[in-house]
Amino acid sequence: MPKAKILLMEDDAVLRYALKEYLELEDYVVETAEDGEEGVKLFKEMIFDLCIIDVMMPKKDGFTAAKEIQKENPFVPFLFLTARSMKVDKLKGFKIGADDYLVKPVDEEELIARIEVILRRRKDVLQIKSKEWQIGTYTFKPTSRRLYVQQENYITLTEKEARLLEMLCKKKGTLLKREDALLQIWNGKDYFNRRSMDVHIARLRKYLRNDPNIKITNVHGKGFILED
Image (tube, rainbow, N blue to C red; front, side):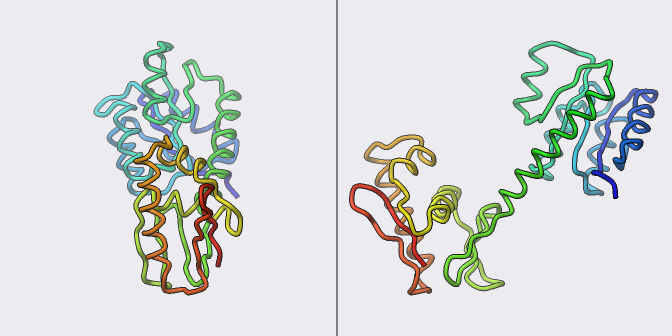
């Protein structure tokens, strides 16, 4: 069974062939593209676990290709390859969302080690993101921000509503401290943020009201407890 499917974008034909051969010897499935435009097209047609992207490519550079890939699937990790070692390029890559950055000439063993770390990290992240919460007769899926009333019917929560409900779920049956939620979601605990949090709690109670066994109890001055 292959370890993962990798999209390799590299305009240097010799390096592209060498990396593909080496990765396949390590049991990866590899699709290649000779420029950014072809790479993005391939990404839209297939499912990949990781993208390795050369920064300097014709038609569409690596940074542009990475941004377009993120729009298609923000959870797919990518690693930049570049002949440049300039700090500004590395910073730009990481700001876009790169998981790693490797300067040419490429050391194949180092590349494999970095790929393994990235894929391990991705697996952990996806396991967390795929978590579903059962709240009475409701199912809450944080990744899509959907609260399912029945199998087919759902409410799409705002980002703050979803984050607040997820924090309540993680603390189900115990106290979620008000200040913890304020700092993590609102980045502050002033009067306006406290009032905003109260409004969001009221909305969550409204969304969950069809199940009389669900309660979000206000512990005065301390926080909230979700019970079902």
